[in-house]
Length: 276
Image (cartoon, rainbow, N blue to C red; front, side, top):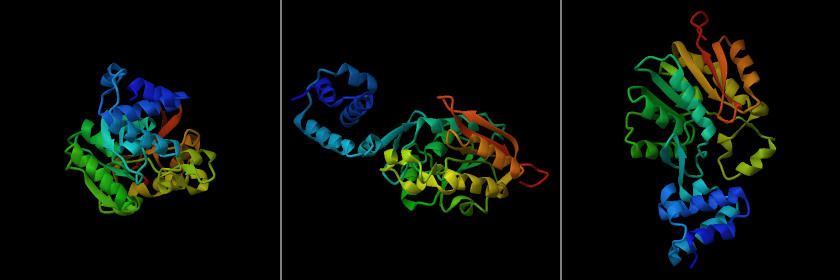
């Protein structure tokens, strides 16, 4: 029988493979990071090794490790994920960070459009427990995943709705609309690396800008005066998103960079004079 160290060393030809092998080991054994590194010479039980070998074969076939473990980490939370939702990325934590810095009421109302796993709305609920929150998604399967995560963190105050973008919330007036919409161009070569994830949550027409543009053009009707729109986008889409916001009358337009220094989140504020 292999030890933990020998099992991952036999499979890790690259840094990415080493990270994934170690994540699988820790996930299957239920170890924290500290427990994992203290147990390197522990021998694997036969059943665990067989399960790990099976998972590794699936990983080599292109299934991402978070889907194999059915969990991912975001904003310090362990979230349930399935192939029906995108795997939460650290880049998206920028969206949450910027939202928490906006001049919003203490009892703000906010909606996360296209919630997926619920990562963003759950992070907001953790940081602003007095906010009134909604989360929407076109996919009923995705909403089931988000609801499961909300139940895990006892966030029954989040209201979930099924529908396409603003169509799901036309009866609301909120202070913040936040969204991580699909923004990868259909022809983008990087899509090959994301083939296991739901394509409708990844890609959009018009060079990846279609969903971003639609939100910019339609969201103002559900915002209170001086309400905010926050959008995550691709690292090279910031200028086009800013220009479209300005074209449609948004104020205080600005772009924020992620931890890697790339343009990642752009904001706009509703202009009372135009109603946009």
